[in-house]
Length: 292
Image (cartoon, rainbow, N blue to C red; front, side):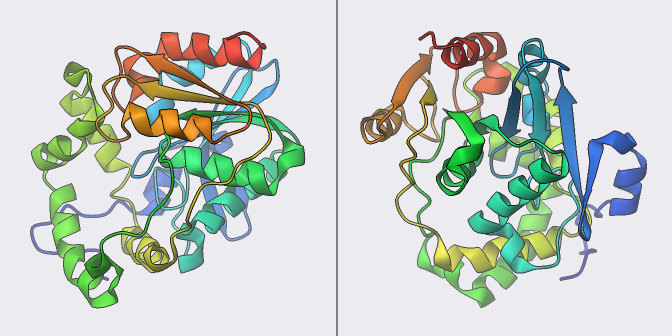
């Protein structure tokens, strides 16, 4: 797919992206550079995984707060943020994202950690814990989807997805339209300033966007069914006003997990790491310290 389309914002080259970042924020894997952000120098390891179409930018408020008691690392997943877009379509599947997390932690020599997954990142955290139970202390799932279902059948058809690509690029090229698209994730609408919206948008418009679009599209026809049920302690955090993942869905999720506990944030929608970072930090710390 062409990187330039009439009327669409150009994609930023990855070489330009890489040159703008501190060298320590890029983890070199085999054939790929992965963007990470880190906070804190002492305490147990805590890994933050962002949601779909988001990035480590989602944790710009939460990370520094958690870094006062933990060694925190946030990872830009395949297809998002300032991570180099892979060429293999399988990298964009759930299994591919799980493999990315494993590779980054191996490269950083982090053998064991607690995982904090926001939205889609919560599903990745669940599957990582299911596959690597010996490496997981505990899990925090913030507004996670209860399961990853197949999309409507038209979107599972390759020709339909190809036809929709220019429309997707066009939507991302219009700041006001993009801001409107993501506003549903916020209960506190005043927090979604044009600066915040633009920060999210620029982290999507990176070289390789077409590869990511194709990769995610290829994974649509094989979306997994019910979520795993790992045996580690789990804190599920819900926003009282979440319009994306309703509270009742998370209440049902907690009932089906053997060691799960639900905490509700009263002033949040789907974006509690930005809407209530201090209250969320307290909830995470209390959980990790054995207090509820």
